[in-house]
Length: 309
Length: 204
Image (cartoon, rainbow over all chains, first blue to last red; front, side, top):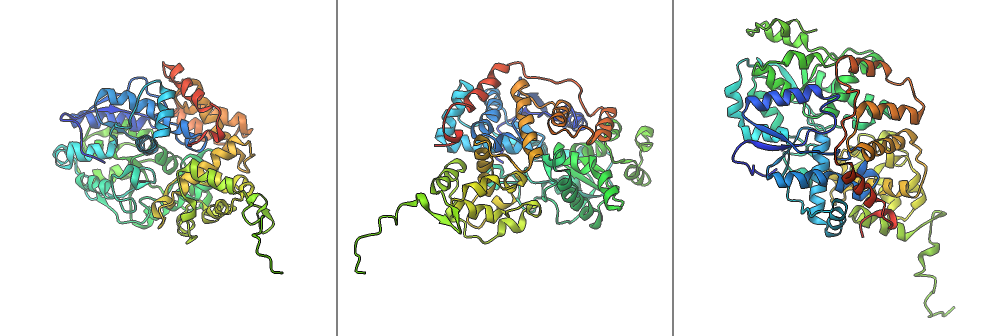
């Protein structure tokens, strides 16, 4: 997306509904990493749900007006909007584009909101902001515990990179940005073909069979390509890759055992930020094996971290 | 049979049939306007179906859904399971050589099916969307634990994923309490506007 509007690293933060629930680990690691990088995330006051995954398949106006209420508030803050969830990011960016392009829709949105909104907020993923605004050099300077060639499969999923006309922040088929970050942390991004394959998203609760197949394919491909862990940037991806992994193993009779980390958790690990151990403990797939593999070659004096399950 | 008078029925599309199925040209126009797409551009190359992660579970494949719309076959397009099995991953929209956003068409078809009360063959998926939106309507934010509980009540699948839910609770990843927006009236105004009369409440 476009370059930052900010001279200082201050952003209108749209946390989304999962960040205080199933993605609490993501939220805590975001707070820690952004604070360490001197970034200031100012929560959009009284933000509401963006309507993912249901509004866009139910009603055109809802799909634009629910995101727009948040963006209208953010616009007044005069900061770029930072969105950690790929699905929220997608819905906010798509609604924003449509409000700019479709006069009729914009008019209905403005009626619904009782205020004018022209689609001018700059909606960005937190991943983009961390890498392009804070910058890889600044991140490298903060790395005190390089991840020693830890083989990581960078998983972007669908909605952060598609559709390209609305989100336009990295290549839609072979994005690079997360791979660059992972390399800056001293880990080794593996080459693999499933970077942007779908995990099944919100079918987790309804067509779990579809999620088992799609997420199973992603996990097995990561494993086959030599990954020791998966890195992601979305609570919904995490929910499927981490929470459903045990069942996928059970049904397929095939052991996978791939810990899944949010990119901010991996940064916290490399930057030796306090709290990493507590975030990783919230995961379903144990990360202890990977940590001890690193500890064998790294100085990891933190006993809580090394004793992770 | 030197009949030079034009066939009066040639331009009357109201009784058009395709393979015995009624064709409704207005439906085709409506999907175009609601989705902001021109479905006529689709030349049936099948790229959408080739890349679709959920095509394996669809009764009509993505390119066939596009064809149903082109042929004005409303009944088939609105009652197939495909429009509910489309997960909205945007792979087809990214790869279409004619820049047709099939995801937007699937959205339009779902919207029309819902508004016309066409019963979805994917009842759980439809229930999920209803429960999700009713939760946002009430509190402005989606409360995960509440959503799961409401979905269980609606689908009757009370025991599904119970161990997973308990594990999440134990790990502090299910917030038992909702965290609603303060300005509920603003959210309700959005839902109110969405219900103002209009054909399918869409663009136009």
